[in-house]
Length: 424
Image (cartoon, rainbow, N blue to C red; front, side, top):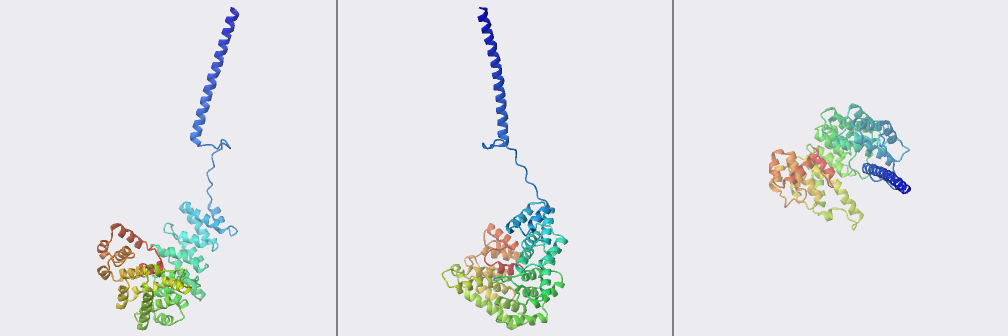
């Protein structure tokens, strides 16, 4: 009996110990599970194949020196270099400007012009060192590479401090003593853009710079228009302009620009400009959209002519420079043109030059293309007609179109023609 009692007590003590160990084990398991749940929630799902892994290290921020080295490394693929250049924009302002400036200073033509474009953005603060560096390097680049920074400067509202850059382009042409080589198929080169920017300069010395440039490059459209706008033509330039517009072997758009520049003093030049613009409108003004654009089912000559037409419509924009009743009559004769490309340019000229007549004669039913943009142009150039113009379309349409005009970013096929009208 004592033995049985002893065995029973012994077993009871063993059970207690086992239960205690089991409870401790269960508590430990619960604690382990709790820790796992916390880690799971904190770290997210853990891949089964690798188990727990340390968290990824934060990416290293490239130093200015590293960025410049990568961008200017001519042994690296150009796509990688340009991708690194774009990453520079993610850095703080001071680092960004320093890197871009060094790329302009030491980079080759594959990256330096792109860095210059980023430097002259409205959001990038400019300083004298940056302007001087771009002005020095831009003369080393080809025409097409020069156009990028100049295009940005053209649309900056606060471009007065950047005038030394277009001046450098014209000085480069003068120093070379020969007209610049423009990319094939382009009518607007770096000299045109530089002249257009300097047309708004307040420095009288730029008159002489433009005159010297046109003597070297007389077949550059915007040189003539800029000299005309600045009232900077002398007898020497007028004589040169006559030789240009009478040169039948020269591109017609440059001939018309030269003729427009001297039309006030030269009746023959005026007649040539009016006649040429009317011939162009007569050829293309009655084509609807389907027939105005090139198509594959027509011969190559017709396609080329229609492509050329889009560029030549810049001549139509030049109607705004002709202070002559026939320019006004030509404008309103074609203001309801079936050709939307013609329709847009003629409408903008009318809005700029003859807003009262336009508001009195033209309605949405007759002017089907960009009517809101036309009204916004009236309001932009002639604020006294803003209220009258705004009533013709919905408030949202008018607001959107006016913002487009204000940003000088009118879209469509006629970017150059729009620039001529809206840029002054």
